[in-house]
Amino acid sequence: MTAVTFYFQVHQPYRLLRPGRKRKAPRRPGDLFDRKENERICRRVAARGYARTNRILLRAIDETEGAFRCAFSISGTALRQLEEWAPEALDTFVQLAETGAVEFLAETSMHSLACFGDAPEFEEQIRTHQDRVEALFGRRPTTFRNTECILSEPIARTAERLGFQAILGEGIETLLKGRNPHELWRPRGCERIVTLLRDYRFSDDIAFRFSNREWEHYPIDAKRFAGWLRAVPSSDPFVGLFMDYETFGEHQGDDTGILDFLAWLPRHVLEDDDRDPEDRVTFATPHEVTTRFAPLGELKIDRPVSWADAERDVSAWLGNPMQNDAHKALYAALPKLQSDAELVDAWRLLSTSDHVYYMCTKRRSDGDVHDYFSPYFGPHDAYVLFVRAIEALCDLGGV
Image (cartoon, rainbow, N blue to C red; front, side):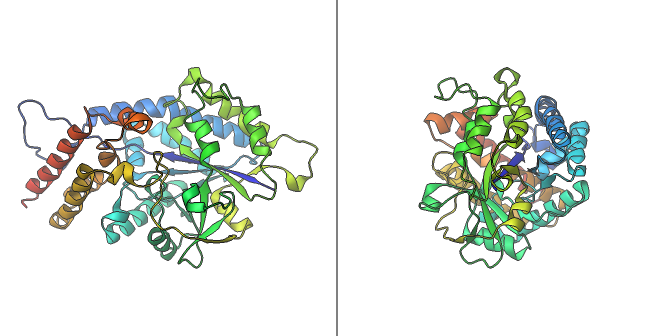
């Protein structure tokens, strides 16, 4: 029996404020961020995407009597924005939690790259996020998803030491070397934690190719896609469909049919057929998969992998001199600000990975994706604004 494991990432960063011609030094750390723009985007995405899509999932859970199941992680920055600017959308996430059919995962509270910058900060952000998720949704997370699915052996060992049972990763060929992404694997050097890997072909069919008119399978409907999932060998434990939640209603709007697709997919996956019940496809959360199946073997992770760009590595964030310089400058500033909680909070908002993502200089399809998300004029503009923000924080702290 194969389980379809839907996982949705919900995240919004705090974008920086562009100073006017008559540049004024910020009086408070919060002045570094573009409050109006962040509020506008949060309200838009919450209305067009989160709230509407959550209602679709709530209906699917109800109509299937809980057979449809899925998982989320919501970054701490997104939670903060939803609490302030779209509490009605946050309420729908709470309603999903109350069904008992939805698992909420832990990540770094700031959606940061602290795993590469400061080990104590990395652990602090994870614990902070665990606490927040437990307080909001009623259950402490047992599955960890690092920022942008970045996975390495040290990251897996840290997650294991913090008590997690599972960690998500990207099922890329260079990592698997011919092995099955639908099996559970134990990262090398770990004793208990298992990794659930993303099936990037199926996931990207929904997240990126669904509305692409040049795709050979366009247009795809829920029944046909469900048929692909049902054709997976019944001996495979699970299929990981991991994607940004903004896929639904924001990156792909109503006119693409993406919301109808999501509404019908659970029914077509679960519809009765002539197969033995043990061979039918179900839905399961990451935690449920880890309790049903044992890892098949050890997974050697020679270098960090992620779900971003064609390379599926960390070059989306740390792939050029500007990005590396900004990353080093950020973490060099942290010890100087530790005595002031407000400064540390602003520093943590700067640690969100989006800020260095905007500095990426890749071209072609990956470059188009980076440009789509960036609120700035270009990578150099993003770099200058970011470095100035670090300098302003240090000035406010008197260092």
